[in-house]
Length: 160
Image (cartoon, rainbow, N blue to C red; front, side, top):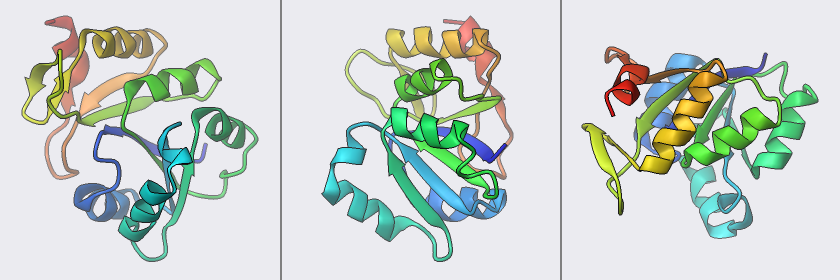
């Protein structure tokens, strides 16, 4: 399987993702999966500028990302998936893409959110979606940066 890691981070590609995570994972491709971003040329240009030298970037809508992954297009690569929205991961899973572990890395405070970790605020809908992903077999963790200890996000969900 080409997927090396899956992270939910509403900032998409930034210092932690571009430098710390990509290096730690030895990722050869960062795949941003987001229907809106895939249609926004300005955002795509900004993301390209944030990607480390030597690392490829794909910015794809969910349906195209799932097709490419399932077709084996990236099988020779180490793909690091980043999404800003948990719903994108649900759509990927429903399309048949296996997501063994999901890092709920950063979700900023928004309307109708509850802060559950220092850098993670989730809505009731996100609780529902993450619970569904867990029920499908995805292990849910939270880890801001690679050298920090993993937090069992399933325990956090259970306490809500």
